[in-house]
Length: 409
Image (cartoon, rainbow, N blue to C red; front, side, top):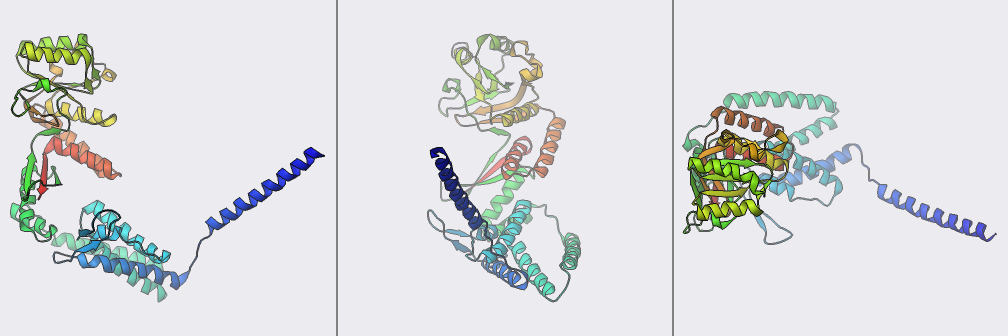
């Protein structure tokens, strides 16, 4: 009887728990539902509220918007998508309308990089007129088809009136408009475009002076410096400068002495410098390089390969194509002990600091470099992640044009 009583008590307790959980599920599953003209009006109100805040930034004479931030001071911007992303409306249905416009602005920013305010204004107009048509009894699908036909016609007209810009002055004019009318920044953008070309990358950084500056990095810049300061050739600047060096590219760590000795012996006979790019160089291998540099006068430097995992392999392959060498990888059947001189890359000059390295005028085939750039362009076009797209663009810039940095004081 006692066991039966316990079972009944346990069953009652479980039933109460299940009822409590069921009530919680019901509570969380509750949705407020609206239909017809009422919900259209509230969604449209949210669209109007967001568009009213964004539209003041439209055009070269647009005004700035001050946005409160959770941390630090307020943000002053004229960027439509930044204003749109900062808006959250208290009414849930109005916020749905605002979110629709945010999606349009973000998509426009991803595709074109600008024009977000124009996209917001057009979206508001299309939604407003579409709701009017639906309220008047028109079939929403017919309205949609009409919008698509109108868009196709407008795009054709715009393309027929479009003018390709090519001169530095025209680029400066466009840059000046994008920079809120600041001619100095427009000229900097034009100069950067002239130096790195269409395939180059232009980035913006905070300057350390009161003046605006343009820094252009020609050749391939690797975000890795020398492993040991003992490789330095210029004590005043603490740089390693190698003229016409061989470049050894290795996918794995180099730690053993036996694997490295055959390569060093072959390079010493040529009396040319050597740059080693590997996952890491450590232990006996690093000590051997330093001793040969200090005692035998061998001009040598070792740096770590940029990136991690699969990204590191891709970066090494980029360097190999630029310099005309091959990546030493056991997966491909290559071993350091059997390395031939033809597998080494070369360049006109390599400069290495404690933070980065620059390879100038690599000896790679122009045709191979162009094919690699075409491959990266196709990957960029299909990339869905902003992070991946940015990394591919950086690799493309290093291979083809270079990197320009606008330092704004």
